[in-house]
Image (cartoon, rainbow, N blue to C red):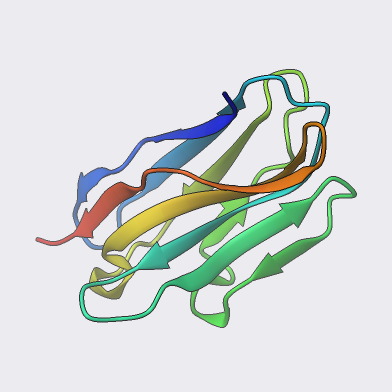
Length: 119
């Protein structure tokens, strides 16, 4: 079974930092892209940051300069999201997303990890 497992969420004060990780497990032949999306209460899910196997990145304007997505660690099928200078408006459930090749291309979603930015 192919799945994504996230970790690293929690409670942090404004201005603080958190690092999220996402690991893909299972019989994966290759990973095309990985990324992070978030959904705040009462809002739609939105893109945070993505990276392709070719290291092309895409960031939401609201996180540029504060968040950094790592390259895909192909040895461990893992990607990290470093979040600095966190703001209360960053509070959301963060979901990992990946496009992987198994016997065909699959889009996977993690179960989500809650990030709360509050004093």
